[in-house]
Length: 334
Image (cartoon, rainbow, N blue to C red; front, side):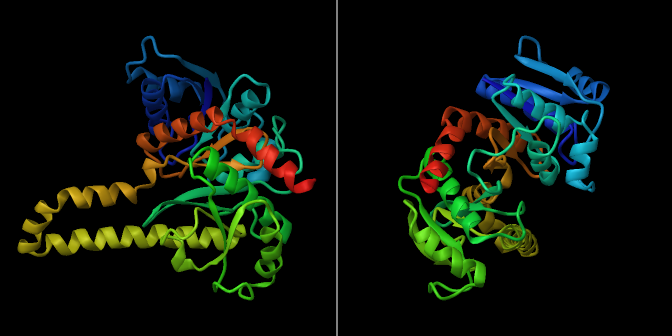
């Protein structure tokens, strides 16, 4: 398998991107194609032992930054690492594309650039997704930013794509799908949610109704669907809360000698909890609805997150994700 990695994507590119890609090759055994600025990428490769490893390099002189307008950058920077990398996927020279860069830039590169791969037939709008740790395991959420203003039928398609991903890639049998709303009753929610509710109910998925914000981490659903504005706020709030709790707990324990002694005894439990809440363990999440396996990770990613994102991409390819999503969408249109 051949996986393209945007070597210029993360906030600390290309050091963590290259290191993560090299680690992924050692761990998963797939070929990684690094795309980026030659001098910078080769300097990082020289610091690592890559002899005999299936690592390739494709030059790209430009970078789409986090502060750039995604659509404009994707159209004007045809030699950026994102657009060049997307071209490898478009031409069938790679099986998946991974980037820790500007999520809007990745979306625009997939849909608007000279190397666009386009949408899966029938998909109205692609969705950016993520996984959230819960008391019961993981919940898959979409959309978390690609579409801030949605139509009810888009949410219905998000539900189908999320259900397919949860089942085929995350291994959840008959995943429970919920709509994010301000109440459990079907009369709750804004106009969008209320109009989407009956559409999801009519789909051939395990729709369990509405979920409130507090339910996301309770694990009452395996897939939670929302528009990109609400989803992004919910996910960022959850991430900030988790960081605040862990930071506060560490600070309070260090301030109390007896608590320090107790913490030593509970070190295993603390480590397990920290790992569960660590975004790096999940690597990234797919851009669902585009006609190719595309994984987007956090800009603040380190080498471990990049490594796991490459593994996630390989898993999605092996699960035949695009064909399965295509089948799911086609069923809703028939």
